[in-house]
Length: 223
Image 1 (cartoon, rainbow, N blue to C red):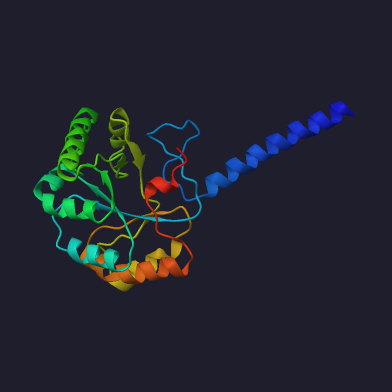
Image 2: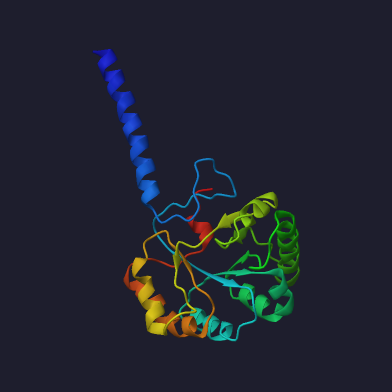
């Protein structure tokens, strides 16, 4: 009888572990591992969603984007290159001063891991000098696979979007329509275009109506 109960307990534990793994794989994660590596964070897959805005060039739409976020009492995650941070220090200081989460990213033209590491290290120093905040997050564009390993060498947590609004294409209505795939635990990637600035009020309203709070990425990490 004891052997039967023991075997049942073991089988139940195995089934529970398999079920947890299965449910986790269904969550909208962008990078996931069981190792707990900082290069591969595990998202909790529930609760809120984050808006991640990568900036690699000087854009005039940032001002209306920041106005909309401020008027609605919401915050986004801004991933910047060191080059942009240096050229637009006042705007970066404003972003940090208004309480938005900061991350670093790399230029699309970047290549070798050694070059990426130098670029990221310089970006971290530049952002910290301007804002007093040293980012802990790296937004790694899917096209630059070696960015994650470079970020890991610098102790950064690598994140990637799970829902790309493709803001360079279509009208504000089209951009807002792409939110249909949103689920709790999502990281929404939104390029800072004029179309996104026009769509942002509707996006915020839509997210709220879905009962999903907009939160920082750090609030969505297990580790």
